[in-house]
Every structure is written in structure tokens, then in C-alpha cells.
Image (cartoon, rainbow, N blue to C red; front, side, top):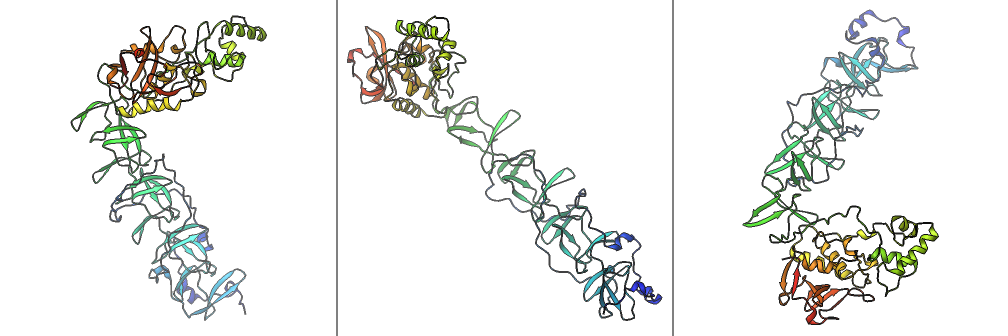
Length: 568
């Protein structure tokens, strides 16, 4: 039978004297099962004096691409629970009432009826090894209560919690001895945790006193190399503080960005470049990035200009790229970019040649495989007729306005095509093969007078050679693809006379040399020498780019007495 609540009985003064253990620091609201403290309270700094012993870094440093500043993102993942409640020894355990009464329940809750009809109120009591809190009305408390300046947590069964305890998805640590809620840094076993002033266990990034710490999803403070969202950080093995700036571990240097994220790849500081490998380790000696080679001093600083390495003088560009091939002084040096043409292009005036002429001829229906790509009377007549239909001045000249009206489908600067050069780190043999390789891939392309490609637009002999040189990293300015289409400009003659190229007697010819042919002693044709008296070239209308014997269509007597060697 449920007994009436003890508030309807007269309390015995003698029992009150024994059981009135209410603490002077306990406000009335605390006795009424106060709600849990806010988990969003501002964190306070703790002490690192008892930090665990340092843990050595991993043998192989990690290498994901670094990210920027960490952003704390707390989670509710639980730490591994500690063992069950430890037998209480604190005075807050209250008197041991085991066997002195029975549990009773009414509409308001549970209370403990003693043999004489009285009950404990405003006190702690130990019953069957568990500690309970009874409010001022004598009812068993649950949830958070504050007493003696500390917070305690009572389970739904009323038992005082100890160790790791979860409340609504948030973890708290309660002293195993007396159940007091912990705050600040706490060492549990071999691990360190941080409990906010609310008692809530911290996870993720935590900033205290100007230093950053990282607490895993289980709340454990990280030490050494730690990966967070794809970036690596280094946390002091002694105290967990996040490192920034240069860090030396053993004989290896690392750089941690201001965010703490480990740097990889190229990194500049005070105008000096360093290279950090995928492991984060600062590189020294030879470094290959993409297709380019670099050399780093023992200090990690990138080399530019000239440096003797293993007794061999080596040359490095201003951006640090090693010249795998460096021509002797006085000859054209390789480059990794061809000179920009800006807004250079050609209006199609009398005598102009090239791919833009061919495109207009095709658009106006006056082109065939036997038609020279040259502005002549037929071309200008067709242009004037079109201009009349389009309401444009009938000049016979294809300027930008006429080009746009034609609707060719091609850019006005379509004649600016330039092949992409190989890396500066390419060796002499690699450059020769790049040049020949480009020409070889154009075999089958049609002949276009004044044309310099690409494949679908066709080439003439010197246009094919010029683009092949570009591919090999040779930029024989002022020879370029725009001048190549001019009426009076003969690129083959310009290449033969170019002072930046070495001339070698014909009988000393090698693979990669340029072979020139003459008419009445004037250079009129050029090909690329493959070796074994074979060349790759294109030479006239209806004859596509191809491989031929060195004399195909030409006699030995028409070959120039010297060959041009672009790579001395």
C-alpha cells in the first residue's frame, strides 16, 4: 500500500537532528533537481604540469595537402566509459541507511521511509552501496544538483554518477570518489581531456591562452602528428600545443603554416623558395616537380643561375628550373614559353598567305587542293562580291569587320597558333625528339602556302619546321607565325640566316639538324633530318607532310652546303 507523503505527518525532532544534513552552500533551487548547466559556457585554461610523457613522431611523416586555419567543431562522440562507481568515502555520501527503511513512491516521486516513519530530507544518504540525494521535501533527486559549490549528476534511478557520464549527448567526467563534476584539464588513465566550465567534454579544436589543442572525437588530447580533415598538424608530445613555423624533428625540417597545417609543395618565405615533399619534409638536393628539375641547397633554398654540382657547372632559370640542355654561349637558349604575339594578326591584303586566307577561300567556295592560300585577283573579287551583299565597303580586303560578317566559325586570331614547348629540364636528346615528334604527328596534313598549322589547317615547309622548333623550346625571334604569312617574308631563308643557330658542314649532319635546299643559290625549302638520309617535310600543293629520302624531288646539288643545328 502506498503511504501518504511524509509532509502530512509530524516529523520527529529527534530524527531531524540526526538527518538534517543540508549544506549551507546549497540554494533551495538546487534541492529541486536543478537542470544541467549550460554546455556552451566559455572554456577556461588549465594546467599542463602533469602532462604525459612525450611520444616520438612517426617514422614516415604524413603528406596530405595542407588546409587553412582550423575551426573547432565539437562532436558528441563518447569516450570509452570508465569502470563503474567507486565506493564513496567523501562526507557528502551522508549516513548509511542501508536496511533502515524502505523505498516508497507516490505521485511526486520516490522517498525513503525509515522504520519510525520519518525520512531523510535535504541530505545525501548511502543505501545499498549507492549514494542518493533527497530534496528538502524528502523526495529522491535526479539529474543535476549543486552542492558544496560543485555539481553532481543523479541517474534516473537516483544513484549518484561517477566517472564518464553522458547527458543528452554530452559527456561529463564526475570524480570517481565523490561524483563532483570536473572542469579544466583532467588526466584519466594515460589520456588528457578538457572539460569546459559547464563540465561538457571538449572535442575538436580548442584554444586556451593563445595556444591551440586538438581533442579527438572521444575527447582525448592529441599529441605528435595528427590528421584533421585531410591536413596534418603537429601537437607537442609533452603538452599537446599545436606547432607553427619551422619544426625540426631529428634531422628533418618541416614547416607548419600559421593555421598549424603542415605545408607541402612549393613554399616561399622572405622571397626565398623552398620545396616540401609530400611527407612535409623539406627537400634538399635534386627535386623533380612535374617534368622540371630543381636543385635545393642544404638549407633548403632553391638555386637560380649557375651552380657547380658534383664538379659540373649547371644552369638554372630565374624560376629555379634546371636547363637540362644549355646551349654554348652565343647560341639560342631553350625556353619554356614562346613569345606572346599580343594582338598581332593579319588583315588579308594583296599577296598575304596563310591559314586565314585558306579559311576565307573555303568559306567563299574558291578553294581546292591545288589552290595557293594567297590573296590574288580571284580572292579579292570574291571578297568584294561578298562585301556588296553584306553592305560593307567593297575593298577586297578582309579586315575584322569582313571576317566577322563571313561567319567563318574561327577566331580573328586563329593564325596565332603556337605549339607548346617541352620543359626547360628537357635534355638535348629529349628536345631533338620533341621536335621530330611534333613533325611526325603532322604527317598527312595538307599543304598550305604560308600556313603554320595546326593539323587541320595545314603547313608549308617552314611553317612545319617553326612549330617543331617551338615544341623543342626554341623561339627564334623575330621569326614568328604572323610574319610567316607575309607576302615578301621567306621563313626558310630567315631560319638559314638566323645567327642563334649553329651551321655545320653537310657531311657532318646529325638527327635533328635542319636541311636546306636552294634554287639558283637561294634557299627555297627546309626539312628536318631524321638520320639515314631520311627527312620529314612538306613541300607543295597536293603533297601532304610526309617522310622522304633527303633527295626526293631535289638533287644532291640543290642541298645547301651547311646544315643548321638548333641544338649545338
